[in-house]
Length: 491
Ligand code: NAP
Image 1 (cartoon, rainbow, N blue to C red):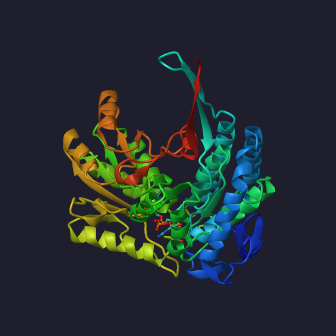
Image 2: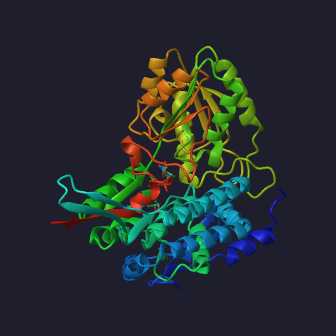
Image 3: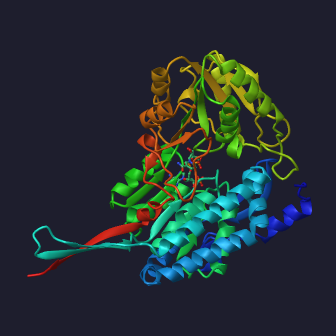
C-alpha cells in the first residue's frame, strides 16, 4: 500500500456529506451551528459538520415516526434488496470510506479497510435474515384454542454509536433495524461523524426510503437525546459505548419502558497456560490487543501468563510490538495510529504511569509518541499487580499488561475480578481445560486459541456491566422484533 497524497485526502473530505440527514433531506442544523472534526494524527481541523440541537433531534424522530407504518409494510424481500444494494455499494466505495475513517478516527488504513469489510458484512448478513423472520402456530394444551405467534417490528428506534468503529457499530444496528422493518434515528459520536454521514448517502443511493434512516450529529448528545428517549415515541434504544453512559441511558429508558440493547465497556482477560503454543498465543495477543490500536471494547486488557512461560512470552510479544510502525494511518506501512484525541492519549499515559508506580516493569514503550498527533507507543508491561488502575479500567490504547499466575483457580478468579463481562481469551492445548475455563469465566464471549471472536454471523455481546442483548448472529434481529401472540378460540 502506498501513502495517500494530500490531494486525495482533501478530495475525500471535501466530497463527504457534512449536513444532517433527516427525512431524506440533507440540511443544516436549524441553529446554523457547526462542530469541528479533527484529524487525530495531526490535531488539525479536517472540516466542520452541522451540529444538531434538540429541535433537529425532534425533526429526525418525527420523520422516523411518520415513516414507520409504511416501512413495516414493505415486503421482506424488498427490505433485503435494499440491504444487499447497500452492501454492494460499500464495496464499490471502500476506498473512500476507508480513507475517510482513517482521517477522522486515526486507525491505520489497513484496519479501516478491514472495518469497511466487517461493516458491510452486517448488511449482507441481515439481508439474508430479513426473509427468515418467522413465527409459530400451536394447539393450546386444552385443545380448544390455537396460538399464532408472529414477529413485528419494535417501531422507531434510537441508535447511538461510539467513535472507535465509526462504520461497523452503525451497520450492526442499521442492518437488523431495516431487516426487521424499523425506522431509526442514529447519532454517531461527535468525534467521528463523517463515516456515518457517508453511509447515509450510500443508503439513500441504495433506495432506502426517506425517513427510514435519519442521522443526527451533535456536540450536545445528552441534551438532544434525552427528550427523545423520554418521549416514548421511539420504542427502542440500541446503544454502544461506555458503561457509565449506558447506565444513565437505561434510567432514561425506564420512564417509557423502552426496549434496550446495550453494548458497553469491556475488561477482557487473556490467559496463556503453560501448554499453549506460545507463538500462536503471541499472535492472538497481537490481535486481541492491537486491533484498532488497542481502542476496542474487546481489547485484551489484562494478560495472564503462566509463571513458567511468562519471560519467554514477554520477550516474543515485546519483539512483535517493537516491530510495529507508529504514525499517521494514511502512511505506507503504518500499523498503529494515534489515540482518538488528547483526552484518550492522556488517559493511557495516566494508566501506564499508575501501573509503573504500583510496581509494573516496562518491557518496551511506555511513553507518548512524538509529533503533534495523539500518539502513544506500543507498550508491554510486566508484573502488573491487581492494585494497578488498569486491572479495573479499560485502557483503550496499545498497552499490553502482563501478570504471572500459578494455578487455574487463581487465574479464573482474577479474570472474573471485574464488573465487566464482554469477552475473554484462553490459550491452551488441553481440550478439557479449555472447555472448563471457557465455562467458568464470566463473559458473553470466549476466544479459544484465537484473539478475535467478532463475526456478523455470531452473537456479539456481554454480561454483567458489559451490557444487555446481542448484536449479529441469528439473534441480532430479535432485538428489533416484538413477539405477538394471537389466541384463537376453536370452540
Ligand atoms: P461514550 O462516551 O459512552 O459515547 C458513546 C456514544 O454515546 C457517543 O455517540 C456519545 O456521543 C454518546 N453519548 C455520550 N453521552 C451521552 C448522553 N448523555 N446521552 C446520549 N448519548 C451520549 O463512549 P465512547 O468513548 O465513544 O466509546 C468507547 C466506549 O464504547 C468504551 O467503553 C468501549 O468499550 C465501548 N464500546 C463497546 C462496544 C461493544 O460492542 N460492547 C463496542 C465499541 C465500543 P458523543 O461522543 O458525541 O459525546
